[in-house]
Amino acid sequence: MTITVFIRYQLDPFKRDRFEEYARNWLTIIPNCGGNLLGYWMPHEGTNNIAFGLISFESLAAYESYRARLRSDADGKANFQFAEGERFILAEERTFLRPVEA
Image 1: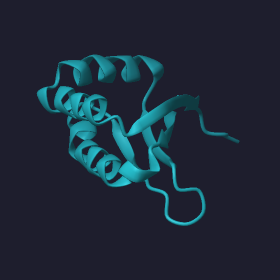
Image 2: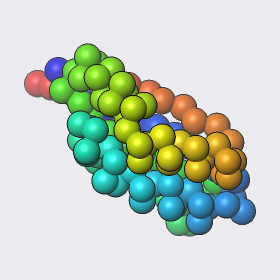
Image 3: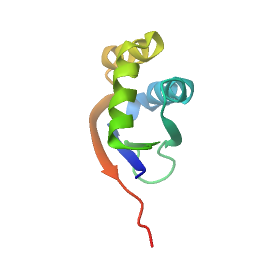
């Protein structure tokens, strides 16, 4: 069963450019570590402090393997450190979704 991780980010609205750089970095890191990146979405109109990321996996076990690879990946570590140092993410929520099938 495919699962999709839906990540909701609450951002510092004055640091959206830094989050966009962070998200852009994931565009190569996530696929290299085994995630099927569906994309990142930035605020455009309306709410200015909420962004989203969606990543799919074959299973929850595949997600766990991906997380282990991501934690040991040099570029992944650097991107996490960038986010922690710049503090542009105020909160992060993960929801695990499955598709509705007939």
